[in-house]
Length: 413
Image 1 (cartoon, one colour):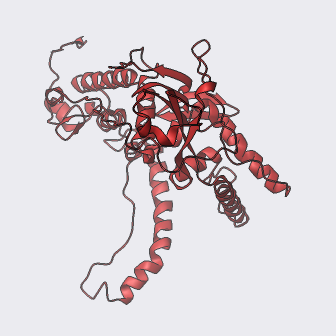
Image 2 (cartoon, one colour):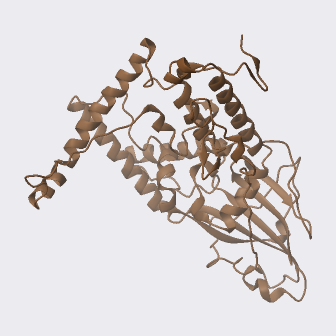
C-alpha cells in the first residue's frame, strides 16, 4: 500500500492542486513561492498536529468570502431574519489522500471502503478543517460583535472614545484569528473512487461531498501512515557569521549561540543599532517619543485602575507592612518591543474593498525569506561599519574610526 496522490484545497496559496506520489520517493521541486512549503505544511497540519492551524492557513482569496459570510449573519440578525448557513464548507482547507491498496491488504482499510462493490484499487479520504459546531461558531461570533458594538456605543456616550477606535472582532477573519482552536477540528470523510477526475490545466477538480454526509468516527488513517519530519535547518556554520563590531556589540541577532534568520529579530537588531529614537534622540525623534510617552501614561492609568481592587485585597492580607515597599503596576516598553511577536513583520499581499490583506513573515517562501534576511544582515554590517544612523552618535563613534575598507562594500568616501 502506498499514497498514490493527494489533492489540497483552500490551504494557503494552494487553492486546488494535485500532487502525484511515486512508489519509492517523491521530491518537491519548484521556483520560490511555488507552493512547496505550503504542500509540506498541509501534510503537517492534517496528519501531525491540527493544533498548529491558524487563520493564515486559509487561502487568502477566500478571506473576503469568509468576511462576507459573517456580514450576512449580522445583517440577518439585525432584521430578525433566519440566519444563513454557518458551515463555511466552500472555503475551509482540506486534504484528499488517495491510497493504492493491493489485494491482501484490505484488512488495513476496512474503515475506508466506500461500498460493498469495491474490489481493490484506490481509496480516498478527505480531511477537512471545519467548524465542529457551525451554529455555535455563528452564535459566538455574533455575540462578540454585539458586545464590541455595545462597548463602543457606551464609550462614545461617555465621551471617552472616538469613532476611530477599533475593537475586536472587526470581522469574521479577525474573530477566527483568536478563536480558531475553540471551534475548528479536522474531520474525515470517505471519497468515491468512481468520481475521481483528472486536473484541468493543472487545476485539481476534487469531488463534491454532500452536505448531509457524515464524518467517519475517529481518524481512519490512524496506524496507516507514518510521518517523520526533519525541519529545514538554517543554522549550520552560522556562529562565525555573528561577528562583533568595534564597540563590542554583536552585528547580528543570536539565538542559542547561532545566527537567527528570523526577519523580525534581524529588523529589531537593525532598529536598535541604527534607528532607535530613544538612543541619543534628535529633534526629528521628539514627536515619536512624545507619542510613546503619552501612550504609556494612558496605559499606566488604566493598569492602575484595573489592579486597584486586587492590590487592595493584597494590602488587606498584610502586604505591604510598615517596612515593605509598596507594590505598583507600570509599563516599561520601547517602540521596538512591537517586533517581539509572530506577526510583527508582514507582507502586504493585496488591497480589496478598503481592506489591506497581510500575511506574517513565515507565509513567504523560504527562498525569499532567506533573500530578504540576507539583505538586512548585509545592510546591518554596512551601516555598522560606516557608523550610519544612531551608530554615528554613540560614544564609540568618537573614539574609534571605522576600518578603511570592508569586503563587499569598498572604501568609504
